[in-house]
Length: 220
Image (cartoon, rainbow, N blue to C red; front, top):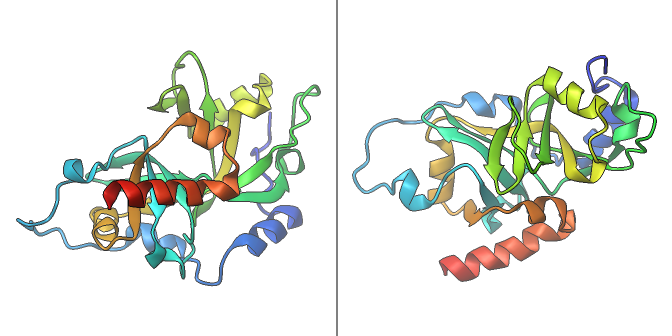
């Protein structure tokens, strides 16, 4: 058993994640912010915005002074209840082998833990590539799935899933109903179709630049 999977209280994890958090970090309470719910006739619909699971949210220049500066968020859930996703381009300096309590002996786990967002830092989420969907995992796009169930996540790790085909994220980005739509209308985020190769194959620190120019050229 992985004994809780992550040692979030360990000095190693706390020290490294503290270094990568900007001073302007939004508190976890952002997920419960109240938003106005009145109908607005001129307001673009979610469908016209292109907002859906399997999209990248690329931070606009308005976000340069926030914790989402040059962030790319993969949207994992979206609906009347709000929206959530993980920041895919913020690797920490913490290697998975430093925080996982139990690992298959043959796995080196040199990969790094990613900072997924400011909400629920004690929550561990997994993105994984798989040719076959399995019970309990949610499809995102192409062969990319996400796992939020702790026991299932433990099972996957204990089976020795190829390390190059999984990413683990501490925390996530969350929005209350209507909050993300408001931010998109202000130009805080650009919406771009997601693909698995950008999550696993691209250089994390270069993803934002490439997608930002792609989104601004597309949307004008």
